[in-house]
Length: 255
Image (cartoon, rainbow, N blue to C red; front, side, top):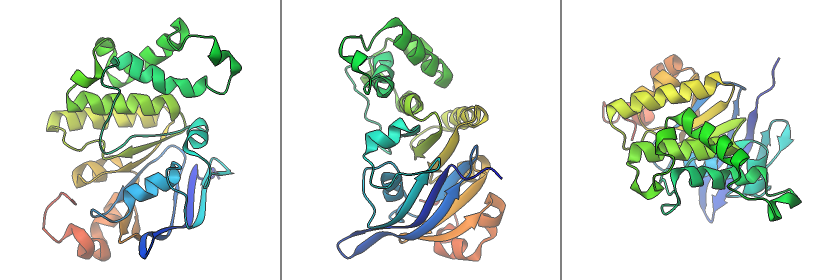
């Protein structure tokens, strides 16, 4: 049996008296898309921050590809093949789209002494960055200033930068937020191609239609705890989930 790529075991973090994440357990299987859902304030992004090394847990363990990573700095976790996006996209606005990806590519070079005398804009690095831009559909915008991109393309650029690091696991934090219907459909197709290429995806998403269509399994959080786990079909019928937030407004958007 193929072991899970990511395992979160009894994970907790406390900020004073606030238990932002409280004894959460789940696993992400290799090659799947797992959705992390829940109302605002449920602890989803805090969980992402724990997994990616932004925060150190109060207790519990995080295992990635057979290695315990909780307590490691973010750059060390990223170097293991874990990339992430953020709710608010903040590119290097004065750099080009290509240069933004080249910066992310730097993680493959920094540990080597040769980085002191080799160019970060070498032909080899530029080709690798262009391949990532082509993958996300931004190759024709490579020389445009990143600050001039509309939101839909900024989301794609963020994914390209994450892919420069995350060749094993991508953490996508509300990558569909603010997008038009057509852009959502295109981004869904992109994430499926990423999965088909063998990269595992863990995503936070408030758009329930997207989550139910895209995810193989779903973990639902509320008030820092895991409320439910299962396939989209199971989650849709879970009475606790419906009681917690799906049925509060009678809408398809969980936000």
